Image (tube, rainbow, N blue to C red; front, side, top):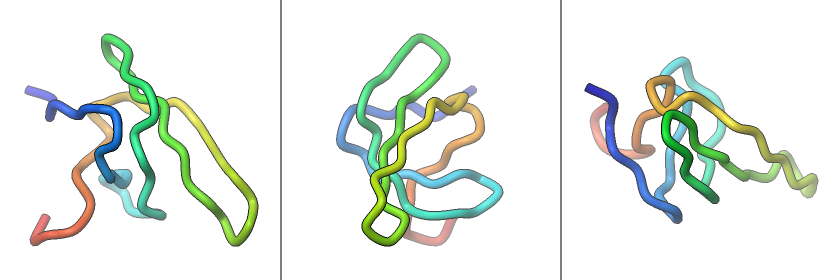
Length: 57
């Protein structure tokens, strides 16, 4: 079962990468935003590809 996220959660891809903030939730996807240096980035990811950032995950 896919993890449940809400807007404002800090996540990252299970494969790695930067920490991102969940900006908007859809049925099976989450729009995430982050900064690469000073450049604002955003993309939509499948929820199943995300995990909560931090901790021992």
